[in-house]
Image (cartoon, rainbow, N blue to C red; front, side, top):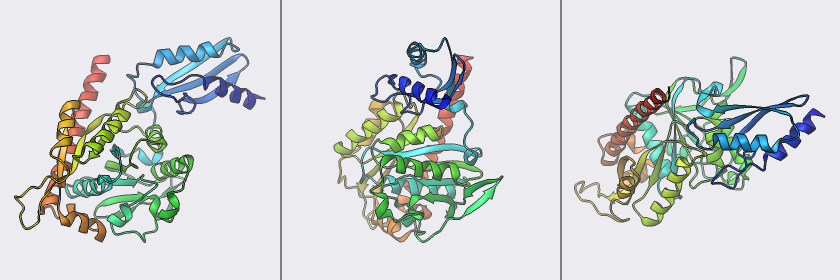
Length: 358
């Protein structure tokens, strides 16, 4: 009987749409821990960020709909105040690497950024959340790796594969990548949650999450699973790629998500022949991502040139960032330094906001 009433409450609350979206608060997993005691109903409303402008309006709408209950008690909580999953308790920064469209080299950037951070002495983890086209195992030359389960504090955890100082988990380790392309949204989302929540990450300075291109349920699942500290958006200088990059920026900055965009990475910024390192040929347009960053008031984290070695490195399983003296390797090392600086700046801003509020 109680379960039926809880189900009815969920159905009623589906009428509450999150402003600016077509999704309701139940679909967004904002309604949690529904409990009924006689004529009293209690539940938790989870918002992504404490400065969400719609908190009061959504609470009022919920109360207005639950007219059958004389007493409605709503606990409003924010994702950043909730405890992280056991696996992420010792992870200091969780950063998504995103792109508005495919083919801009997002996974290449994610892989080499992870290696560059590790080369600079940081403890790094990399989650290949590109469920429909996992490429990280190939880029690290560990397609045949088989992660195993280990019991940690009575919890079954997946031990990540470790290579080049980076802890890696990818759906590509567990299924034929060709079969993952036909997964429906819920299957893909659940797979991502399992990689993040059941991975035995232990202590990390940075966890990078290589997202699928575009904006989808996977992105929504990510922000619901773990409080992201920031996002990096990757684009090429082409106008069509930049238009999609804007969609990615807007998604992270939308009221329902509010994840700080740390900055943009312009990949394939120019072509430089290895034998003529001073020459620059702008094959895909010039400084498009740089102009977009200026327009949006965002940091340009880096401009990565196209050199044959970056393709060879990805195919051979040896990321080019392993060679910091190369043209592209040096660009990724500089990108890593910029990301660290952006994270520190973001932390300082968050502290100032908290102090102002108090």
